Amino acid sequence: MSLYIKTNRIFNPVRQYSWLFTLLVGLGGLWYPRLGLLVLPVMVSLTTLAMFKGRYWCGNICSHGSFFDVLLMPFSRNGQIPKLLKSPVLAWLFFAFFGWNIGTKIGRVAGLWGTMEFWDRLGFIFVSSYLMVMIVGGGLALAFSPRTWCSFCPMGTLQVLSYRLGKLLRLNGATDAKVTVANQDMCHTCGKCSRVCPLQLTPYLAFSDNNQFEADVCIRCSTCVLNCPAGILSLNPQDEAIQIKEGTSSEGYEHRVEIAATLADTRDLAPDVREFTFKLQEPRIIQYTPGQFILVKIQDEPKMYRAYSISHYNKEKGELRIAVKRMPSGYGTGILFNNFRKGMSVTLEGPMGHELVVDKTAANVLLVAGGIGVTPFLPIVEDIVANAPHVQEVTLIYGVNQRSEFLYDDEFQRLQAKYSQFRFIKVVASDETWQGPKGFVTDVMKDMDLSSSTIYMCGPKPMTNAAQGLLAQKGVQETKVFLESA
Ligand SMILES: Cc1cc2nc3c(=O)[nH]c(=O)nc-3n(C[C@H](O)[C@H](O)[C@H](O)COP(=O)(O)OP(=O)(O)OC[C@H]3O[C@@H](n4cnc5c(N)ncnc54)[C@H](O)[C@@H]3O)c2cc1C
Ligand code: SF4
Ligand code: SF4
Image (cartoon, rainbow, N blue to C red; front, top):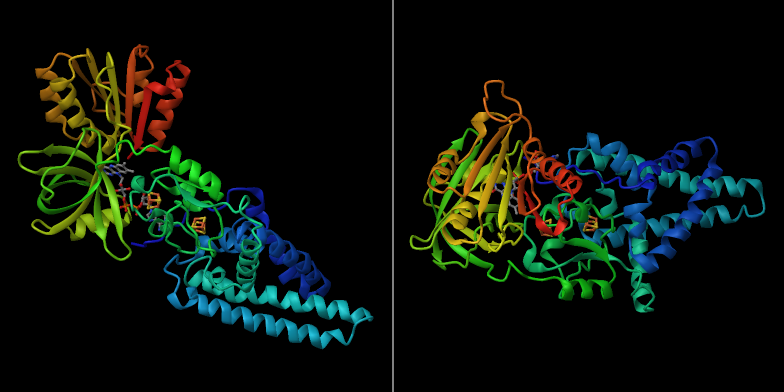
């Protein structure tokens, strides 16, 4: 179970193909050394750009970075970068050594100035350095993590130096787009930003008061931004970060607290789904609204939680339940299924979230669930039938692949039998023995009149994407659609 996740880092054609330049110089230069002279404009460009945008070059243009990410990542062990190689001391020492080495080599060929040989010998200095990066950086990429080299690359350190100078001269206030979190209370502390980060940085543990990640080694690659499950990250200069901070509402997160609990019980709901029942110790009572989720701490170092929808909360007993689906090679679910034992102490954080908090003034409510995404809807339906007299009809469409995957079926059937305003529709994608509706949730939704419905969806991304597409086609206003991906 690796902590670090191999994920796409190629977001544009430059990142996709700039590795060709490394091969051209590093290998082509063995036959035609003057190709190495192409490195000179590269060095000037990256140093100038860094003054305004930090290590943006490394994350978005660098041909070595592209070589590591595109060609070597598929074969990398993708393990932890050794602490020593991430040490700033090593980076500065290596920078000094590299500078001295290149400087003395240039000094040696300077005597040939004015001859044809000068350009060949000068070019070859850079060809050999590109070849060295390919061999050493490539070896480290395979043995540890694709971008291990970038932790101490002298060109990266040169950019840090130029960036600091730009800061000193106040040149980069408007151009320096740093990782920005919209609201720190909304962070799930899941660590995914760190698990996908090419340099294995930990932005989620180091946001400043301005909600920015200030590390000048960050290569501004956007990988964390595009992978954050809470969708709260962006790359922005400081002024915009302040505007985002001031303009982001904390609604649904204002009652987030740390909770000391014990694991009172576990129950297997399906071969790969386990229900965990927690007894809250301190505080014993939480300000929970149906539809919200809770964070479960899975480890201390580095601090990491996982988000789970609350499937049941009993205020009197101080009891809270979640249902967890084990993911193939999932890091957090591996810990929850293997290490969480009845009676152990557990740290929770929450409750939080507002996407699935139902508007009880709506005339009709449609709930759309896929797989494990059904869990928040059990307390939601219980709450609507008991406490929302304005809601005339609440319908749950629940889609799974195989009929054996339905969760909380008895509970939903009981609610349907007892409350005439609740309709429960089950749909199965691929099970010949299933007599009910077949296909996807969208096959049921397409024939429904949704003009007066407020819609809440929870499930895998492909399901929520398809349902959103259908709702747009049917002309349902976006303001009446709310979703959470599970
Ligand atoms: C608001 C919210 C509510 C949620 N509610 C629930 C809920 O009620 N129940 C529930 O079960 N889940 C829920 N989730 C999902 C949950 O938070 C976790 O994301 C889920 O349990 C998986 O965690 P993990 O650490 O095991 O998976 P991860 O390790 O993060 O893996 C996620 C995926 O990436 C893949 N992966 C892992 N490692 C690698 C690698 N090295 N290379 C390539 N791919 C890899 C895995 O196969 C898996 O498919 C919710 C999420 C959110 C945001
Ligand atoms: S913190 Fe984000 S933007 Fe910075 S290097 Fe890591 S993944 Fe890229
Ligand atoms: S990826 Fe997780 S830890 Fe990082 S900012 Fe997003 S929610 Fe927070």
